[in-house]
Length: 293
Image (cartoon, rainbow, N blue to C red; front, side, top):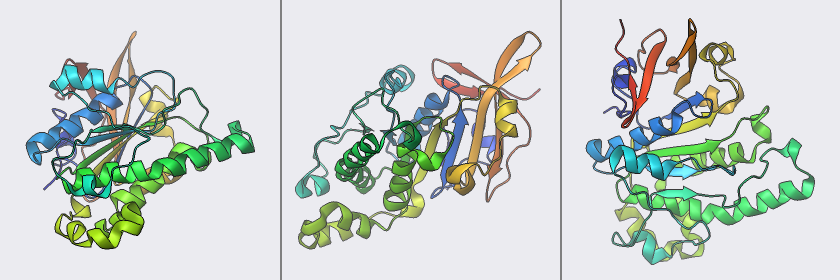
C-alpha cells in the first residue's frame, strides 16, 4: 500500500502516493512550504496506519522551524518534544505505556556553522563529539516509535551547503537513514541496548517491525527560490538526491508581474509521475495542489 502524502492533489501526481520503504527528498528554499508538507505526511499516518509519524529536527539555526505552531494550527496536534540529553532505559524502551514524545531536535545549541570548511579542527571535533553523545538518544527515539507502530519519519533542518560531504547534518542523516531506518530491527536493538541486549532479546524479537513499511521524507533547504533554477540543478548533486526514490522540487514561478508557488517531480522510481509544473497554495490546513486547467 502506498503512503499518502496528506496533501490534497499530490498523491494523484505520484501515482497514488509514496512507496513505503523508500526515501523522498523535498527540495526548496526557506518558507516555500516544506515543513507544512512534512507535517501533512506525518499526520496522514494517523488515518492510514493509526499512528502519526515522528519529526527529527537537525537544525542548528537560531530561528524556529515552527513545527509545533504549524501542527497545532493545522491538525490540533500537540507535539511532544524529547529531551536530547537523556537516553531511555531498557525497560522504558519495551514498555508501551512509557511516555514518548514525537519530536526530537538533536542539536540544542543554535546559530552554529555546520560545514567543515567553516570550522576549525577543534570546532569540527566538538561537533563530532556532540554527535556521538546524541546517537543513543537518536536511535532510541526512532526504535521506540517503530516498535509502537509508527511507519513515517520526517527529517527536517538540513541547511544549504556547497559540498554535502562537508556537512555535519548530512553525516548525521546518512547514519540515521542507513543505520536506523533501513537497518534490520534486531541490529538496531543491539546498537541501542549494547551490553543489555542479551537480557532483552525476547522482547526485541516479539516487538519487531518491517523496515520495508517505513517511509522517510527529508526536507532539504536550498538557496534557490525559483523553481526553474532548481530544475536546472544536476539531479545527482550529492548522495541524497541520487539515492532518493522520489524527489519533489518546490519553488516560485514568475507569472507576469506576480509569482506563484509550484512543484515539479523529476524523479519517482517504480511509478509513473505526472509531468509538468503544478501550482500549489498554502492555507490554514497546509498545502493543496491546485487543479490543472
